[in-house]
Figure (tube, rainbow, N blue to C red):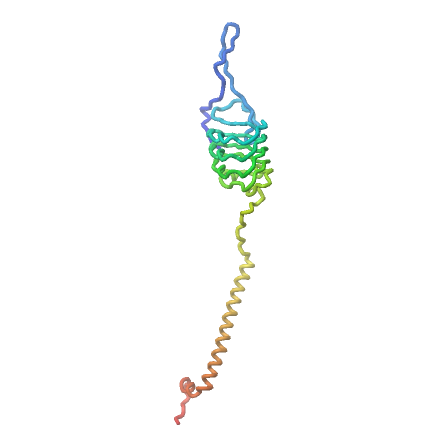
Length: 236
């Protein structure tokens, strides 16, 4: 929400009118009043501040597409086009309304995706695009993280947060193994390691045993001369 210096507020009014009473002229001025639906709430403005720039064209049965030229209204704070018969796509030009605080496009016949460029509207405090024919993922980030489900109701083909419907191309993050699975894995590795060691030991023992038998049997004299300790050998 933007802030303003309230000590220098001015209001929209009509001046220069003259009321004639008898022979006297009385200058007259009056303050404009207006009823707007702002951020989903119908509000009576008895005085309209000059800095408050809003367009409320709701409930007028307007047809066809949203004019792209609306993107030229850089100072616009509020735009309400709800309850019309607007068709086509949400124009990308709305992403240039960087002062926009409230955008209501609900109850129309708009189609296509919500432009991800709307994430640039960092002052946007209210968004309603419910009950249309929008499709695809809801943009993520910045102000879009603050909007609730009711901002997007009635669009069965929309997906992504804050809706419970996940998008088809989204992937669940890998689930870390439970402690039980991790322990089972480590026990399996430990057990397998010991089996390998045991198998190696057995194979080594068997090979050594057979080689030793061959050496002792075929070259018993050499074996005794080489490894006999403390036993004198006879001379012949």
